[in-house]
Image 1: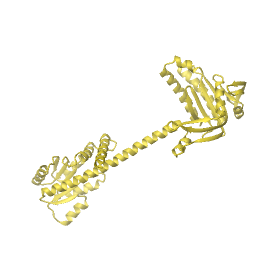
Image 2: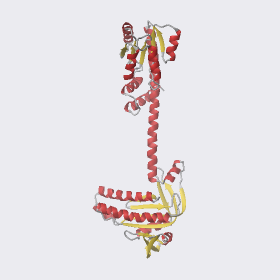
Image 3: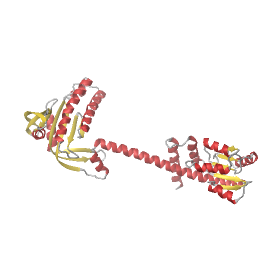
Image 4: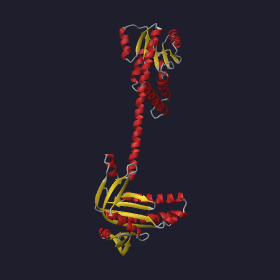
Length: 399
C-alpha cells in the first residue's frame, strides 16, 4: 500500500513540476517538490524573526545543530513581511515584542492574505500571559513556546509543523492534479465530440452519446445527390499526388460549404465521388428544392475552381427522390449511410448523366417543375433498372 502511495506522489509532482498553468511560482514548485523528496524537512526554508540579535543567533545556532541549514533572519516584523512578499518560506519562528511591527501585527497581516499558501508559524516569546497565547493561536499561530526555548521541544514542534505542511502541500498538489486531469478530459471530450460531428449528423451523434447502440430509421421522402468527377482516372495518372489531394480538398471543401448553407447532410466521399442528402435526419418538405439548389451551386463552384486554378475538371451530377433507410454502422469507425432503391437510382442518374449537368428522373422532376426549369432528356438506359425517363436541371425559374 505504501508503494502505491509513493507512486501517486511521484506522479503528482512530476506532472506539476512541468506545469506552469497552475499559477505556482518556481519557489512554490520547489516547496512542493520538497514536500515529496524531503520528508525530514531538513531542507526547509525557515525565517527567524526577533529584534534581539543575541537571541536570533542562539536560535539560528540551535536550528543548525538540529540539521536545518536554510535559515533567514529578520530583526523585526516589518522586515519579515517584506521578505514574505518576495520569497516563500516553509516555517517562521516569531517573537512578539518587536519595534515597528510586532508579532501580533505579522500574524494579523498573514491572516488577511487568504490565498497565501499555508506556512506554519511558531511563536517563541518571553510573554507568558495566557491571553497573549490565546491571541496568537486565534491569529493563526501553529504553536507557542516560552523563552528560553528548549532545543528538544523546539525540534519536536518544528518537525510536527513541517510534517503537517508537507501533507497539506501534497493534498494541494493532488487537488491541482485532479483539476488538470479534469481539464484535459474536458478537452479530449470536446475533441471527440467535434470528431463525431464531422462524421455524423448532429442529431445522430446526440443519440449515440445518449447510449443508443443501433440507429436505423426509415424516411418516406428524401432527395439524394451523387456527383462524380469525369475522367478522374486519367487526371490521377498525370498529376502529382500532393497537387491531386490539394485539388480534391479544395473542391470538396467548397461542396461542404454549400451543404452547410443549404442545410443538407453530406453522407460521404468515395474517391472522386460526393454524396449528399436532403430531408434527414430532420424531415423537411422542400428537400428536393434544397438539393437542386446545391447541385446548381456545385456546377458554379467547379467552374470557379477551374478559373482560379487553371484546371479543367468536369462533373456529372445525378439526383433522385424517394424513401430510404438510414443508419449508423460500425463500432470503432462509425459510418452514417443510406440504403434503398431511391439511392440506387440517384447513383444511376449520375453515372448515366451529361457532363456538367444535373440529371433527374421523373419523380424528382415532379417535385421541382414548379420552381425550376428542366429539359426533358428522354429515355436513358440505366444499368440494372432498364430505361428511365430523365430530365436535365437548367436552373431556377425567373419570377
